[in-house]
Length: 155
Image 1 (cartoon, rainbow, N blue to C red):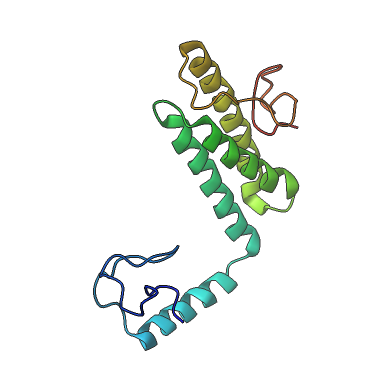
Image 2 (image 1 turned 180 degrees about the vertical axis):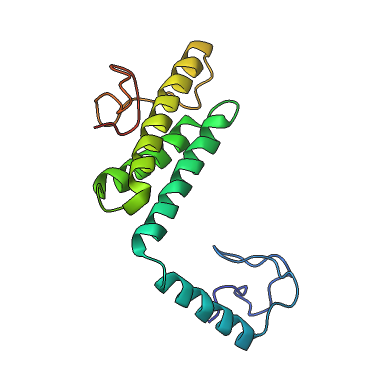
């Protein structure tokens, strides 16, 4: 039985498929052989790129995700905190293994942690925090040296 079909067996209304990952039909896509060829090209490209470069690119993406949430009005502190904690886990967990990107990622982590603390303070004083819980889950200071203030991660 197809879980995307109604229980009576009829087809779902166009654009109303149910369940995660179902999107309205946007028309004809690439043909299967062309898609398979493109996927193989991408796979070859990924395999020819050192893993440290791919991982570092993902870490930069986490930095950007945190920055986007911090730049919202009001700041999305909880969402930013998750992205910063993930960035910290990657950067600190893989210390010395991220190649040329390592030092800039360490610096970026320190900067985004400091920005989180500063924006969190401003939000708290203005009464605009997105949630009541900007508590430091690690219970320590951030790597940029903002002692005694809420920050994600932190050594």
